[in-house]
Image (cartoon, rainbow, N blue to C red; front, side, top):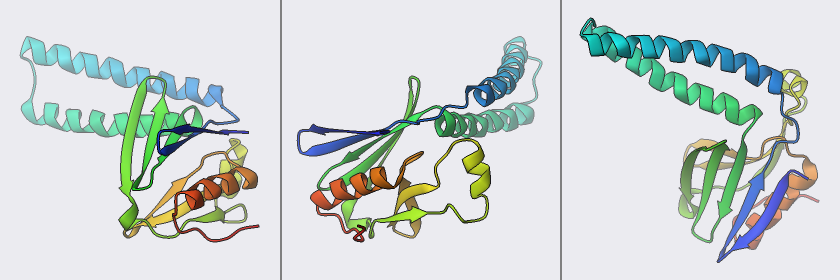
Length: 176
C-alpha cells in the first residue's frame, strides 16, 4: 500500500509514497538540469567580473526561478512523496523531494466536498499510465480551485483517505 497513516496529536498524517519510480526519466532530466546550472554559474561569473547586462540578469534570474519550480514539480511527480496533515481546522499538503519541501495549508471553512475521481477513460490517461501513474485521486474544491490528494493511489487507498477525512468531519461523497 502506498498510503501510510499515523496519528500526531489531534492530526492524522498521511504519507503517500509512489509505487513506481521511473528513474531513467529522472536521470535524463537531471542532465538537462545540470546544463541549466552550468549556464547559471557562467552568468554569476559574469556578474562578479562586472561584464553583465542588468536586463539580461533580471530576465535570466526570473527564468531560473520558474525553472526551479517546474523541475521541483517534475521530480515530485516521478520520485517524491506527499505528506497530508488532516486537522480539524485545516489540511496541509507537503510535497517532498529528497531534502526539498513545499507546504501549503487549506482552511476547512473554504474547503468543498471531497470525492474520488477516476480519470482512467479521459483524454491523456494513457500517457500518465505509460509512466506508471494512477489516474485515481481524491479531489475537493478550495474556493474556485480544484485541489487533489493522491498520486499513484488505487481505489482502496482513495477510500482510506476519504474515511480519514470523514473522521475529521469533512464533507465527503459516500463511496462503497
